Amino acid sequence: MPRPIPFSALLILAATFLSLAACHGRDQAKGPQPVPVRTVTAEPRDTPLVLWTVGSVRASNSVSVRSRQDGNIMKIHFLDGAEVQAGDLLYTIDPVSQTLAKSQAQASLASDRAAAELAMQELTRYKSLYAQGVVSKNDYDQRRTTAETTLAQVRASQASVGIAGQTLGYTAIRSPIDGRIGVSKLDEGNLVVANQDVLATINTITPIDLDLSLPERHLEAVRLAFRTGPVQVLAATRGGKPEQVRGVLRAIDNSINPGTGMFDMRARFENTDEQLWPG
Image 1 (cartoon, rainbow, N blue to C red):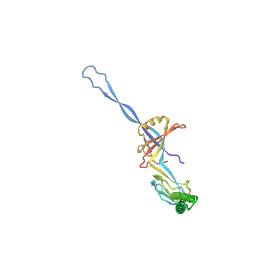
Image 2: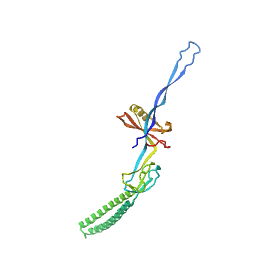
Image 3: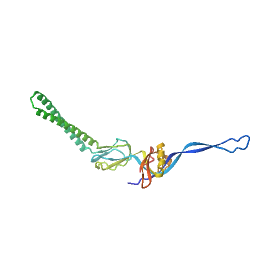
Image 4: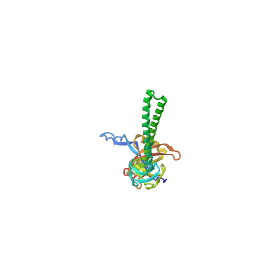
């Protein structure tokens, strides 16, 4: 895996300090020259505390597209690098074997329903005969058991039809998320192995995340600012200005790396103009 390219970033933490505003008293008309007195008023104001660091850009959501069924790719339905929406059809896998399996399951269900209907009719007839004393209780119980067995088989066949339909649906591979899809790793006609081959990767980059680290000595200041209000994060794009991309701190990790003495954070940027790119 290529090493992530570091991005320059700075965190702006809100801090309060006292600003001293001065005013002088008036000179008296007579009498000795008064000693100058300066009246000082303390006024609370906010000033930013800026912390510089570097980070790596990552997609806010990333999915590796795989097939759930073995088969050949019949059709690719997207252009490499295009924006996709959740539910968009991406690939079609040859559905011949799955279609046949569903047809077989439907045929078995039809046969089981016919057998169950016949068994229920037989049970109704024997119930009347048993009430009249024409047949024994053992004969009636046998017909009841047969009817219950055939009804259970119908339920099992219904489940098989449902599974076959779901399996057939897996031959249409759809996007699970909104995002930008990368280059297709396999072309039409290639054989796909279920749950193994990565067909493409979809990254959500609007919004996008930036992973950051700072030394442990800044942890309390960052946590305090994070609790009291949004912490702004400015990221410098490759060759761009820091002011161009603004985001907010989204999370502070729950531990400090004992090897480096650093703690991790994650910031989020709307990135509507896609100035930030994963990598």
